[in-house]
Image (cartoon, rainbow, N blue to C red; front, top):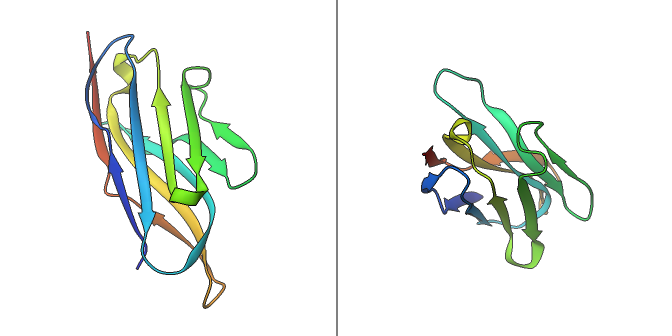
Length: 121
């Protein structure tokens, strides 16, 4: 069973930086893409950043130019470097991946449990 484990969440200061990491493990799979979503209280979950393996990256409008997503495919990890943090970046951040099962060749999405980031003055 594929599992995603996020780390790096916690408090941060306005204007500061923080880096989230996510490790994908379990089973035999090929990672198609990896990314981060976030959900603030009373708001819908939104895309933060996505990276296609060997392909393009996509950023949400609100983080474009401030956040950087990177992938280490050899380690099955994806990182999110968050810079120039704002109070509105406060949310639960979820790691997501789409993989191809090498036994069935089926694609499936998996999600982490989420990690809280709180940005304060």
